[in-house]
Amino acid sequence: MEFSEIQRADKARSASERPHEQSPKATANRVLNSYLNLFNSNIQCHDYGKIMERKNMPNVPNMPNVQNMPNYPSPTNEAGDNERNRVMTREEKRRIKKSFNKLALSLFLYEFIFQIGYAVIITFGTDIFQNDYFSMTLTGSLAIIAMLLLYGWEPQKKERPTFGLFTYIWLIFLFYGLQMLSLLLTLPLEYFLHNAGFSLEEALASATGVLQGFWMITYTIVMAPLFEELLFRGFAFSILRKNGRMFAIIISSFLFALMHANIFQFIVAFLIGLLLAWVRDTYGLPYSIFLHLSNNALALLLNNYSGDSEIISHAYDVLTIGGLAVLLISLVVCVPKIRSALGEEQSLGRMMGLFFTSFFVLFLIIIFILLTSMNLG
Image 1 (cartoon, rainbow, N blue to C red):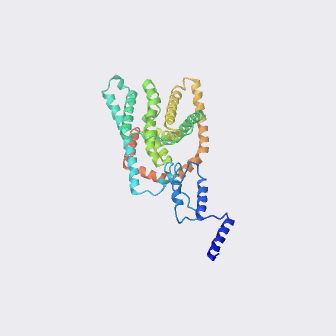
Image 2: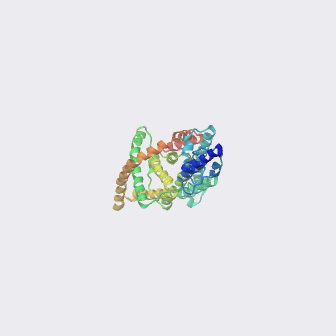
Image 3: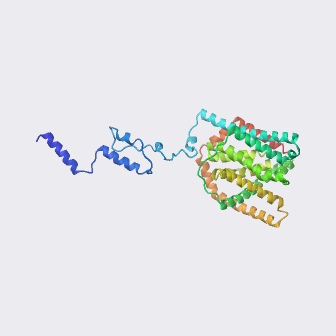
């Protein structure tokens, strides 16, 4: 037997005596399969055949690219936070400011149609159109329809938690807790404006009027909350939400408070707007509408009829005291979560800067500051 044949025989015998040592290709196949078994059974690496066909296969293959696998959740899918947190180009900033300007113009258009339409109907309409609240119901409906026709609707689709009875009751108490807090915060402002020589009667009357008549009650309980929720938590929130969750909650609440055009309603509208925006993002728009309707109905009942019924008077006391208790508990539980959410949304400050430096946003703010000042004599 020749020497080369002896070497081949020794190698064959050595390989048979050491079955645990495998070829590089077999080793790669085993390791790759172990990686694939870590994922869900429905995930398959489409490049597996290409990997195995490589001639210079390393002993340990690279980790498969999970971003290209089907059904595997991308870590940047949730509201695009990672995409927003990176450095933006000038073109991206221009695009974002364009969307903010479009939103500001849309809100101005809504107010223009509402106010001009109301004035025209009151001036030239027949008897039924002389009713302020019937006319506001009609013009508000026309303004909302015009917004939808011009700019469309972008619903937010995602899985949501269950909105139960306990959640509803807790949020109703929280509404009243926020109203009590806003009252405490407004008192120093009222004192300052009064000492500065401003007449506050018109603003206070607008914020705390007595509700009488069918159309006045219908508009206050049903139509006004519906218009406001569709406008601020529907249309505006959907546009702002693309730039961050906390950003959308804060800015939609600011716009909601600003467009009340009443200095005494600004703080309470902003605080309640924060809660309604959170409800809209967490549970959906129908629930923010339902809560807004419920709050206005309770306000009508308690503020206008508490003096005529002892039961209603006691219910007001329960809601006030219970609301403060719920507010304190909510602050203790939620403040750490809010701080964490604000810290995680690294794009918040940048988006705030882009929003408040957009031309038509500044235009809208100036217009409503002027309207607000008209209520101060």
